[in-house]
Length: 386
Image 1 (cartoon, rainbow, N blue to C red):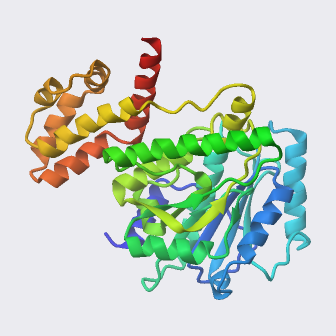
Image 2 (tube, rainbow, N blue to C red):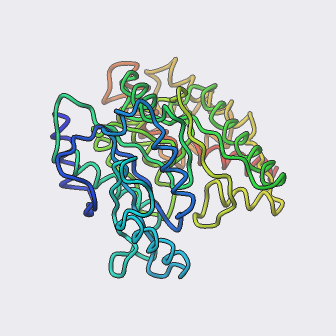
């Protein structure tokens, strides 16, 4: 299937497309930076200014910024007012110099355009990415590889953000990438200590997944994702069924369908502020820490236990599902696998794939990022109860 066919198939079956205002037709953009915006008038300006400093200047003429200005109908009045102020100033060209960036926007804030009350940033990000993909399809050329960047309205980027991320992604041959990040400095010592601990917690999880050979050893950050247009379509687009977590599920699908590259040649700087907008994520975790809930690292034993399973699959590709279970001594892992239907699933994988590498890859598609996280959390919980 051609790249354009993959994109068109996704657009027909899965996309949620809205009109992008202010973008000129046939602009031949190679990059689309999608930014969900909810009451971010001041923070967004700093984000856009950091984007406007990207070099070389030619890259800015090839890049479109799509703002998805969104709120639910039941949002706070001050949030709606902030969004409406931004829309007004964008339309009157009094917000940012229009010569700096190619900025378009999707209005999901005005009356009768709002997000459903049970949806949030996940749907806003999906609509922005889907609508960018539609623009790519309308202006498709086999001579270019369009890329989609997922950013947040309170995240600052480096001057080589677009060029470096695009180059690293295309050079790797992967469908997606996660850009290195460092949270902005906090407002006080307590919050700074919290954000430092949170980054350490996240790094600990990823580094241990690397150590045991998991293909899902990357950070899930909605403000640090880049992917090719084909990769976005192949991964079935952004996950938007819940109010948050779209980055986790999207990256999981990217890894399953074309790989996720760690990009260290540039960096983004998300906000470290306290927020309760999303049920999980940086803001809520910082608030919980400041109220006395520590970031407790998952035990090394949990990862070591998974490593045993991964080693069995790697070194004994012909083993049966029941045979594999018989080699696992840890009761937590064995019960987890039984309840997950491992034996039946592995036997099907073994029957359907004759090559050793293919079997191992398919196993990791089955024992995916979500199963990995669920097992690590379960192991940690049960060990605490011992």
